[in-house]
Length: 333
Image 1: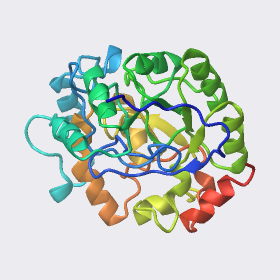
Image 2: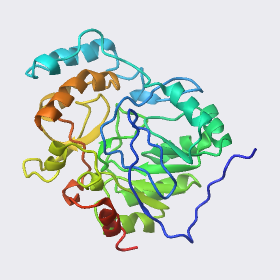
Image 3: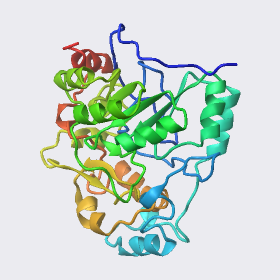
Image 4: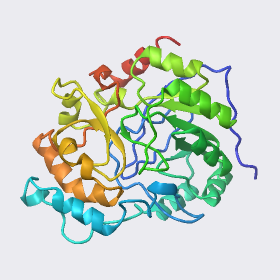
């Protein structure tokens, strides 16, 4: 059986895409030109695994990168003083590491195939890409540079999601100890298209119709948004998170490892200001370490301690049906 081939369809009108959220995985299952994401939502244990059969997070930010020792994560927990006590206190014992049932998820996708599977936080093994494509699933990889796009093409993926640093939530960088610098998304698309002959889906900081038109003009097949949908009627974001996006008290977004041990763009709040400088690289251990606190803060409406993921265009997010947001963003197409 031949694996499916994906080719650019420039005769078809590009579309603006929105997120599909899996329960405990930053990796999104999406449909080409219908569903995808800017990764705005809170990450919940995305898999990291070594070897050809798993997700490979390589170079300085991998599992052996700086700050990955249990000692550094434990010290970070100790330094996190001033946090609420009781139910939201730090968990006891060693910082938790897991792969979020990586193999079980792959087995499920092979047993009950879906149209498209996308990967974030590193490259899947070449054999997994081959298995998924044999099951007639289109495989998409999120990248943040031309070099990462080349590596993705090298394992046989069908398309790439090109994520700019302006994106809300976690960066898809292969090197979380050294996140990519700021680069306008149209320029990043140009570099990726010059490096690989794969369809490009653009993501990161797309807040208005002009942004969408610009990335399509740069050569993207589609534009993906996430932060723009956080205040829509259908959004699953918490009420405090939605309110913070337009609260004048939160006027800056920053890329921080404070909440999860992996770089992510969020509104600057008390937790970021206090702990960003000392947060080690340590995903998913820090995600688990701070999870109880963040859940309690969300329940209490305490935006000082919540991970308020947001892209640079968060002020443009509106309270309205998602269909209206999509129509507005596609207004110049």
